[in-house]
Image (tube, rainbow, N blue to C red):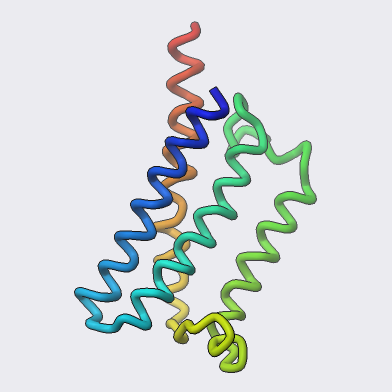
Length: 131
């Protein structure tokens, strides 16, 4: 079950990365922004996915994080760090990324929550099918 949940989440994360890249490249007409959107979206998705994989049966919103407050703190800190990386010029050069607006960061975070939502939905579906 863990492998199936991980693969499902990985497919959605890859799709998210491709969608973010496509938006930056085709809509914004900027290869640098496309790379930044894909990189940031995948980072956010992986961080959020770790919350869902913390407990294979209990949903995140039903106290699935209560047993691991350190994970929640690390994920929150890492999201803030990613936001900072997008806005510190010296670090932007190291990662070859571009600055994005606060709204874009929030949009990418929202988009990155889709793999977590699908993982949580699969937990619910699994519980419902078992009885």
